[in-house]
Length: 98
Image (tube, rainbow, N blue to C red; front, side):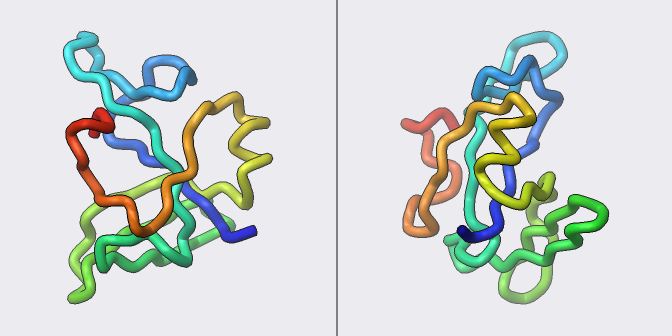
């Protein structure tokens, strides 16, 4: 299994598969992508000890930070419900709630 990470864009409102802002005005679906295939031309730098993933553009610009999980089972044990999204799936697709 590839290493995976979960999106963490705002404070997490429960572990129901969405993240929402403090005031509840914004909801974003959680997604899991393989660090070996994040898609969109992005690259992942992983620090498994710190459980940190930096998602960068091809020129090295940091575009996203995420929490590192060894595998999908580790995500489930953490009580997080999120779908594994293939690298071919576009980032930020509005119809997916991103």
